Length: 360
Ligand code: HSE
Image 1 (cartoon, rainbow, N blue to C red):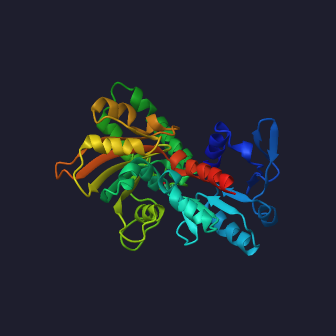
Image 2 (cartoon, rainbow, N blue to C red):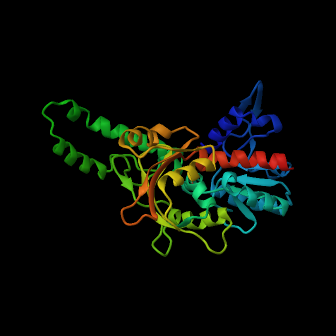
Image 3 (cartoon, rainbow, N blue to C red):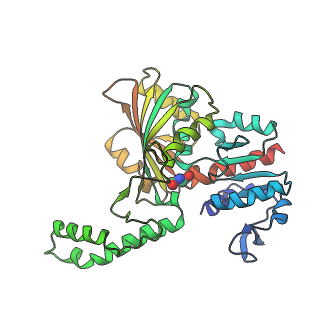
């Protein structure tokens, strides 16, 4: 899925004019791959280490498992090329840079100059948060952040998205007669729905539990301090992307999986180092990059624009509901929505690939 979005974005922006690409697959070897202009590409074996060793740059949109197996073999095979992927396997390695160039281009070029060749896209909710609040990070006025996330099914993969739709489809089939009967009572429907949810009728092969008309307040593995691994990543990856080894910014909260398709949202409480008027905050955020857009903090604009359905497929990241909390003027609250597959996955990789091509 990330590969498809990446390919689409690269074609849209004409990125292939500077590349002589080869396409690899783990499952569809020798099948017809993408078509670029009139040229059709055949898919090579993504486990053929010798074929991969001949590449100057490898961009992997595959899983952590794939990186685990293939990256080590390439290094053992004395491969000297650039590795670029979006999985978490190598992110925290000392010789790997987490890339999000509108935020950390200085760090990226510093490491390129040092000869580092491993560049990894960050966790999606982290990249979207940094793109949203980039101006505040740059101005160094953030003390700490509490982030409560509402993460879409796409973050867990395409099978998860399919299963979400499948659960919704089954629910609507089961309740077809109830919905169409004038005598049906909503509390009876609700009671029946509760029975259906945990009856085993709904498909839960991938998600393990029903998520349609519900949510799951845990993403990724459990770590031993009560955080989920997704929550741990928010703090650790943000500071690595910003290059903060000391004077780190603390980010913590709760990551929640919800039944939306491909946009991650987050409710933020930001403790500022000083009181700054909201108008100035808006200017700082707005001027930082071309993709963040501010939604005015009123009901009409918020419910019309600041939603996963409205942002889906869009390269813009929206931030709204911005105001000072009544607990104190240095406490800012906000709500942001970004497409998980674009800024959360494909876009940082696409941009880093162009940076490497222009660098070498
Ligand atoms: N871990 C993220 C999620 C995927 O589960 O939504 C993006 O890195």
